[in-house]
Structure formats: structure tokens, C-alpha cells
Amino acid sequence: MSVVFWKELADHFSSRRFMILLTIIVLTGLWATYSAGQTIRLDAENMPTESVFLLLLTSQSGALFPLATFLGFLGPLVGITLGFDAISGEYARGTLSRVLSQPIYRDSLINGKFLAGLATVATFWASILILVIGLGMPLLGFPPNGEELWRMLFFTLIGIIYVGFWLALAMLFSILFQRTVTAALGSLALWLFLAIFVWMVAKVVSDIVVRDPSTPEQLVQQANIETAVSRFSPNTLYSETVHILLNPVARTFGPVLQEQLSGILPTPLALSQSLLLIFPHIATLLALVAVCFAISYIKFMRTEIRT
Image 1 (tube, rainbow, N blue to C red):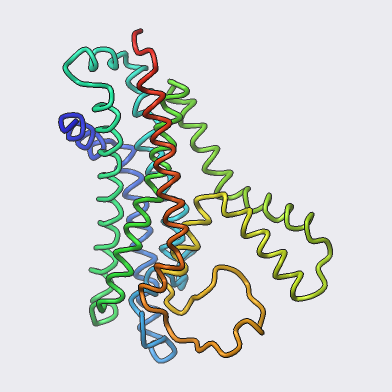
Image 2: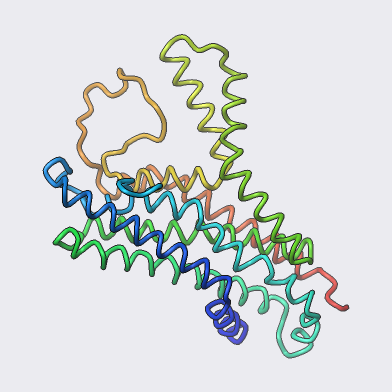
């Protein structure tokens, strides 16, 4: 498996399509970080005194999207790029049977490919975090404190799990369809639906269940139904997790009534409390990764590989 792992890792980092996509995301991320840092410096008096460094990831100042939102939208493209031809490309080149004719087991092949893709994703996400910290320190004039650093590290871990789901899904399509173009189109179509159109479906469902809301309770019920339906998308799980993790003041995922907030001081939550809130989301993302890879594993072990 180690032989397959290092070979696939070298192929990923020498791939032109991956390097082009990585360059686009990194340059855009640097621009978002620089714009947010300049805004924080110019408006330092109105900025909160705590968790200022986290604003580099969540502030929209001068950029189309906050950096965390931008990574959540385009991050899946990295996973899809790494996985859509992992097996179908071997079929197309006719090299799969030749590779497995060597003393390499099937499970070693698919495990090595998946772990190499996951290591590439981890390197990609960690590199962006290092760039944000390195650019933010001269912009803000101080380094992140321990609480901010831990939150940013957990943000990196969640991003790796999130993109790992799309990597496992792309590999699954690569095994099921055995054609590179079909696997790529299927992965991209599902990504577009879960990233964009699932919100429309959630809105329609909430409007059907709660018709003509006229009270605050009905409005909250409608919003909760919309949120529950949209959570079928990993994009929603990622965005809600990042919202709680990078915004220590946040305590809820959706809208709440004013009566429910009475008596609650707007003090930042400790990291442990924020992790308790987002634990179900993290567990769900991990389960999605495990299920997709397990199906890929079982299907690949039973697939005819001879041309």
C-alpha cells in the first residue's frame, strides 16, 4: 500500500489540473485574507477585542465571499479532481489488470489511492491555514492566541473531512461508471445540486408544510423545516459547523425567538462548548466519508478487472 500511496501522491502534486485549481483557490484565498485584514486595521475601534484573528476567515470585507465560505464552495472541486479518475482512469488506460498482476492486493490499491488523495487534501488545507496565519500576523500586528489557533486547527480538520467526502464520492462514481467523463459529470452534477438546488428544495418543502406564516412561531417553524431539509447536504453541515467554530459568540444554528434569548449574556463560548454543539455535524460528515468509501471498497473488490 505504501508503494501505491507514494506513487499516487507524486501524481497528484504533478498533475496540471490540480495545480491550476490549487493556484486559483490559493490566490483567491490570499486576496480575501488581505482584504479582511485591511478592513480590520482600518476599523480596529469597532472590531471585537476577542477572536479578531478568526475574522480573517469569516469577514466578507472587500471580497465576494468570506474565505471559509469560499473554501466550502470550491473545496469539493479539489476532492472531485483527485478522485473522479482514480479507478476509471486505470480502466481507460488498460493498466488496472497489469498493476494487479503484480504482488499488489486489491485492497492495497484502493486504500493507497484514497489515503494519497486524503493526504493531498490535508496538505492543501493546511497550506491555506499557514498562509492565512502568515499573512494575518503582519496585517494585524499580533499572532493568534491559543484559543484562536485551536479553533483554526479544528477548522482545518473539518475541512479535510468535508473534502474527503467528495473524494470518496468521486472514487465511488469512478468505480461504478468505469468511465472518466461519466464519473466527472456525475460528481459535478451532485455537487451543484447539493450546493445550490437543495436550498430551493428546502424552501419548497417548508412552504408546503407551513403555509402563509403569520406569527413569529410559524416563521421559526418554517425556518427550522428549511434548515432540517437542507442538512441532507454536506455543504450545509460544513457551513453550520464553521459558523459555530469560527464565531465563538454563536450559540444556535437557526433562528430563535426573542423570548428564548432572554437572560443569556452574549459572552463567547469556550472551545469545548462549541465542539459539543457541532459534534453531531462532524460525526455525520465522518459517517458519510466512511459509507462512501465502504461502498467503493466492496464494489471494487468484486468488480471484474480483466479487459
